Amino acid sequence: MAYDVSVIGCGRVGLPLALSFADRGLRVLGVDKSPEILGAVRAGRMPFDEPGAPGVLARTQVDWTDRVADAALADHIVITLGTPTFSHIEIDLSDIRTVLDDLLPHLRAGQSLTLRSTIAPRTTEFVAGYVAKHRGFDIGTELFVAHCPERIAAGCFFEEIVSLPCIVGGVGERSGAVVGALFEVFGAPIVQTTPVQAELAKIWTNILRYATFALPNLLMMDCEQYGANVFDVIELINHDYPRGGMAQPGFTAGTCLRKDFAFSEERSHAPGMLLAVSRVNESVPLFLVEGLTRRLGSLSGRKVAVLGLAFKSGTDDERDSLAHKLVRLLERELADVAIHDPHVPTPTLELDEAVAGADAVVVATNHPGFRTHATLQAITDGAAVDALVVDPWNCWGAGQVFAYARELAAMAPAGLSDAPLS
Ligand SMILES: NC(=O)c1ccc[n+]([C@@H]2O[C@H](COP(=O)([O-])OP(=O)(O)OC[C@H]3O[C@@H](n4cnc5c(N)ncnc54)[C@H](O)[C@@H]3O)[C@@H](O)[C@H]2O)c1
Image (cartoon, rainbow, N blue to C red; front, side):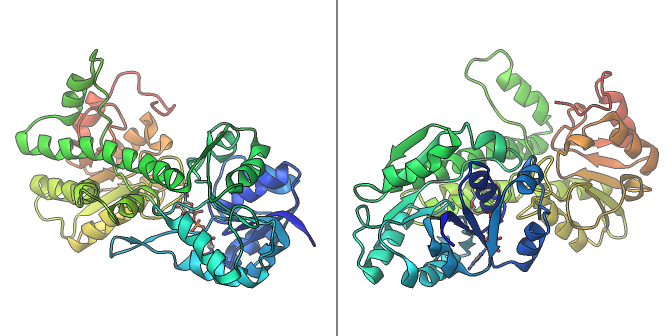
């Protein structure tokens, strides 16, 4: 069987991409080693939430396999494997290396190999060099290698694949043109550049966000030290000021933001700057636990309800979520932790059960459903009368990171309804 395109790694990025190619009429092979993923898609089920995906899965034809070598049956091979970091401040390319070794004997002239995963600078050149070294192809005329970074936000795939400029960094003479022509099927503008510029553009897109959120997080910690209110200070910075723009505090992590800065730190000329950004964001859960113990005393045997496990509002994705770190830290204080998250696959309690009699409630994820009058009411009705509510997201507009439940209802804006606050 011949295919137009194969997608290797059908996770959160690869699966919607494979479906999108198929939806444009391309013959697609999806490759993944996970029996759970293959079992789900073969049964016509999405293995994770992605709005719009179930409909596309139902109406498209994709062949699925766990044999990486079969990917070489396609004219275009797109790699969407995970690229974690080692704790050595270095990209972990082991999945990409394994797959390349499986593909090498089967590659043929005229094929393209696209790296869609997020990668450290110079990884595309490495992959092109690796293929040239072992197979002798001239990259750019005989075989085409490019980096075409995924910049779509989880939950917005089908909206953004047709609109976000698609960056293509091709190696040699014609790789950019060949891979650009493949991604043109989605109709978004194709922006040609060099491989290293494509790599830098992607990781610095994430670094920008990671650093942007570290500033209000650090400010939140400073405000606690000075007895100031972070939401008031942010309002003073931003209000009617043309050069404002301070973001809001919160848990800043997830599989991309938490790791991608390390790809830059691999060879940084200002080593440590982005590590400091990371340390600020990573210390927010500890800051909240310390804030709790300062106000409540020992947490040993006290019930703490945690609302949210996902790393991001409205998603079921728990990977690298700081909510899990918060739970671990609370457990190390011997607190009795009760968790509620209606989105994630991890089993959790119902809201009423989680907050019942709680000495403290911490909002770890700003899910839309939490930012409602009903959730606030459930807390004030169910938690202990003197319960402390910790809300770095300002879910209810009360403008307090730490507030007692009884005060919170009075401080929330009068218009708070059951529609989530925007
Ligand atoms: N998730 C996002 O929102 C997002 C956004 C932009 C970029 N990215 C980047 O895209 C890449 C993929 O991310 P993801 O979230 O889709 O990861 P993921 O872990 O969800 O998907 C990777 C898939 O590859 C499969 N796999 C691993 N080794 C394999 C092998 N040898 N053979 C076949 N399959 C194999 C895994 O089973 C998994 O399903 C990463 O580089 C990530 O940084 C992710």
